[in-house]
Length: 229
Image (cartoon, rainbow, N blue to C red; front, top):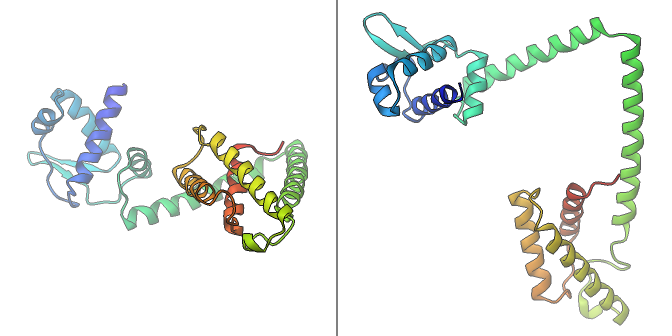
């Protein structure tokens, strides 16, 4: 079953990469079987699946052609799953179908809702609101005064105590970055931000100020890796 799904995915990508136009003839079962090194029976089954999704269509005594009609919703889901690009019409159709499904889901939920459902929803909303308030309060406290002086002030204008505070802040940030870089939860963008920030702090030994944007990115990554309870 898995092999057949893989064959369907490969066949969809092949058709997209070759950019066959609607109504254009595609290779025969024999040619496709040779290309993918499978039996004609497997190719026939895969093509039947694509035909059911309105991706291709068979024409008696003529061959296999790309469908001239709109692909099914299931076909759009398959395209997204295998990474095949969608054209503007496909994207528009998928958005329209999503709207229809969401509206129908809301209507059914309202029709079938019970008092217990509403009580449970109110409890979830209250708990969520309480947690958001705690998070906002904690983050505001952390970010209100990351340093006890303007964070963009040049190092030479700081007092000795403030200079020491900036260097210690830089070392704290570097220790966090060193620990976070071992995490597999970081995105490539987050890793790039941390590498750039670490390079800056190490090159000037923590004397240059971190910009407000850098502080914001630092705390955002911290929140992703270590969310508040």
